[in-house]
Length: 446
Image (cartoon, rainbow, N blue to C red):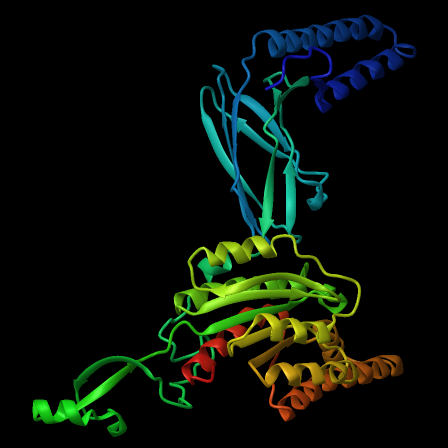
């Protein structure tokens, strides 16, 4: 806490100005009513004495309260993050405080204040929540306490120099909120049953006795001859498959939804997919791109890979140019040698825009299993579903329906070229992407 300043730390309260206004009013009335002048003098002297007593009490006999502000070492983007404050009253009397925390400029909060009454020698604990909508470094300033005594004529400011910088990372809280069934047989929320597998896993696990329901094609005849009973080979789910998340940072990924850009939703979803892949013992990697190459993290299943991807996504920003899919194809061919599942987070607003990129997507799909994830335009959907009262409303709805229909045509166009795709609302992106990954792994399509 900084040293005491007897003037700059002094702030008069509304009670002081109310009392002063009352004294001025009596002086004005004294010009018209005889006998009020002496009362005005007496009232002014009483007010002056109260102010002087309050000042002496606050600046010479008041002990500074003890404050402790607790912040997380990093904040989660798009999620409520708690800030805890503990204040201990070191006085033998009740005090009234107003706490003003210097919040980072990104929040643009100019009216933040918390008012509490603290009993004598007591400690109060409270917290408030902050929800950042931009990744990056957030700088917290000092915490100010404005302490008032029972007289309440003025307040003394105590400043605690506890400024700090807190990085805002992609939404890692989703890892704790999303409860996934990790058996690999059902999507999280779709309610589907067991997936039909496209092929047989060839990762040998053990030889076991035959039980009804086992695939007769897995009978091990040599072991059967030795044991004089049917024995079958047991295969486990293939592990160490290679997954890459490709994140488009072009201008269309800057579109906002509920305070977050589409890039933020793609990054948050990538973080959850990374967690799921590592739980499945698959190797996960990352590529970000726009008109030029961004970050590249080779696929790995080391537990530290999640932290590597988190740090790489920490300060990713959208560009204002069109993404270069030809460059992406060349980088994929050069850097990813093994057949992999590539989850491409991008956005197409028109069928014409998608058709310009399909030749490059087809080239990538020749060597890898490509899943294109793009977004519904939630604002157009709201307009299309709104009630139309005028001819202009009907015209606007018709145009909105046309663009929404083009999104569905993009899905069909990708499917015609053998490219998997997901068209999803931003808020459903994580669930849809994880479900599709689990489905593809269940079907052994990777």
